[in-house]
Image (cartoon, rainbow, N blue to C red):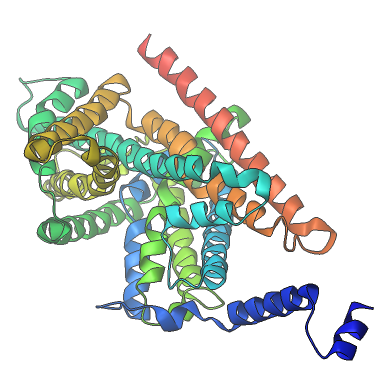
Length: 453
């Protein structure tokens, strides 16, 4: 009827104008391509993005996978590695897809991890829009928690390696791991005072070279003279499986660097899809983690330690070199990992500090943060259990919980799929997250109490 009146009066009524505007806005959103509006000064090639993502997922966690297999046995460990790889890949995919779609709606070239979460809540269901600022804080603090928790693990990595080296070179000087954590406090405080990313590039190069050499030496010892498979269990007690899940998530999750890598690609359309940078990288990562975890466990059995480098023979010069290299690699990686949480924390408090005291405040914040990570390492001086605890709390939250919630909120008023597929699928993923969180924390904390009481 309204359309008839408009035709008769040869004029537009209010409802028609509103409808036309809505259709126009929708058309503009669909025609807007975020990739065409990205102005990246130094875009990364597809191959370069692959290596960046590979590097972010291949780190000290790779050396912890044999200990993870100890908690499940061979068969559940292999299946669990594939399962965690698939879930981690899917959560990255839904986060990147949601970020691209919200960029198209908001007509923005790109969004960071935190800004993606905020924009989704700002444009989501009306009842949730009021929580957008709380979501910003939660995402930032989750990111900071991942970095701070990860660096606590690094402190134990370095301390354990130093203890192994010094115990061999100077057997008359036996110190505890807690003591080595304390010795590391001052050097870590000093190296963390470097505030600009460009000055950290040499540290990154040194760390990468040392880590590659360490992995090469470790693989050499692992694959030479493999014992019979009977040295390892086919399946361990189910009660220990949660520590495998949290360790595997700690090892494989690199979601904190995904958005920066995707946003700076010369051809971002190559990031997702099959074959895409993400899928190819995660297949390689899952395969490497599975192989190192499986054969490392077969090699050392129930005696495997939190980092497989600690199982290398002390009397062999090549093995001793690998232990020194991994200590150097993780030491320089520490300051790189601290860059992100320091940037987040400083952006929160800089406006509350007088300009005259900015330099002193930065020094104090960085010193306090390093002290916090060392304190956590001293409180839980067991590499294997600390990795499980940090993976269960921080890495699962950043890599599982937030992407699932963000996609659900974004799709709520749009399209949840046939038979609400997205809702059911994300419900299962949320259940998996809570299983990892609760069981992983319970297993790690209960074993910490037993071991140190």
